Amino acid sequence: MATEREILERAGERIDQLITSDLPDKRRVPLLYRAANELYGGSPTLLAAEKLAHAFSEPGRTVMICSGWPNRPMVDPNIAETDGPPGASVIARALHQGFRAAPLLLFEEPLLPSMRIVVEAAGLRALDGEAALRGIKSLGSVHVAGVLGFPSGVMEAKARASELLEEYRPAAVVVIEKGGMNAKGVIHSLRGEDITAPMAKVDFLIEEASARGILTVAIGDAGNEAGLGAFAEVIRENLPFGKQCRCPCGAGTAPRSAAEVAIIADVSNWGAAALAGCLAMLRGESSLLHTPARERRLLEAAAAAGLVDGIEGWVGTSVDGLPMETSLAIVELISTTVQQGMKSADPKRVAPHLA
Image (cartoon, rainbow, N blue to C red; front, side, top):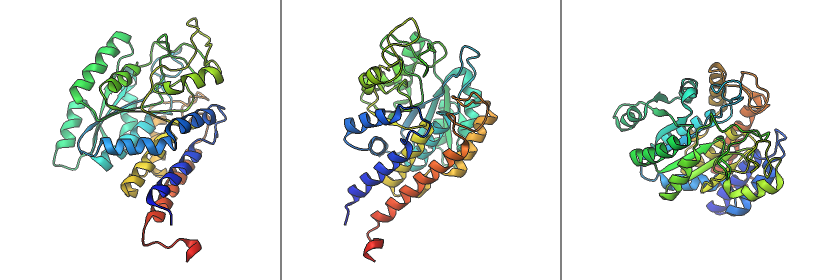
């Protein structure tokens, strides 16, 4: 009979397979996932979940979750995409519900009105940071998250990173679908264009948190995201514009900041659903699973808030060129995989082939 560890690892691998099939045909994820799997010696998603579960073994700790991707900033810096914020909200809910964590979500200042709408679609009341901490400590059954701005200016971001870490002392920093600075401090689009100006410089938060011994986790789907610096050489040598971008910096799109664990997914939102699934499996609590119904609410809220598909450019519920129904199916498959893993781990259960 398989051990509990073997069951966990097998389920983690199956979940990873669901989110790394290259369904959007970006032709990046399989390469990045292989590099991550080799670096960590197994499922990056399961490893991230295990490290988060350990970091939040003491209830009431704070988690900082960064997301938001200003899309088509040359048109308007207030346009954001549907990939990232829904996933950030999924992670916030799972850590809050499963570990009584206090989630603080950080976005670009101009995006805060739309981001609050998305966060609340996950069931969390969006408040400022101090009010969120009061809500976590209150005796009433109110489930809250802090929704804060993070600077796009370099000097301001450096200072704010230190201030936030000092003030809230988080147990972990999670970054999902955020543009990452390269060696010259430039952030690029998938097409190798300079999109530095409007993007919150969360690399400084990753780097400062790492220097303080705080757990950092990143989720990305293209190789130009903050926190994926552990794969910089793979990105430079193998991905379009990895070594030579289209902007004058000439340093390519490979990010410089490296999170302690980086999850690779076809769509970053799916990486968040997978992470929630692994957390549910580790806790033995199916209530922590993300659900298709909640995914629908999140994507409909994102559309209502004016977020656009990062590939197609339409306001709507699609993500990275894939219809909402695809995301709902992936979430359902992750849930099924986790629940099957839980059944396998039940000592009272007899395996079908032995019955």
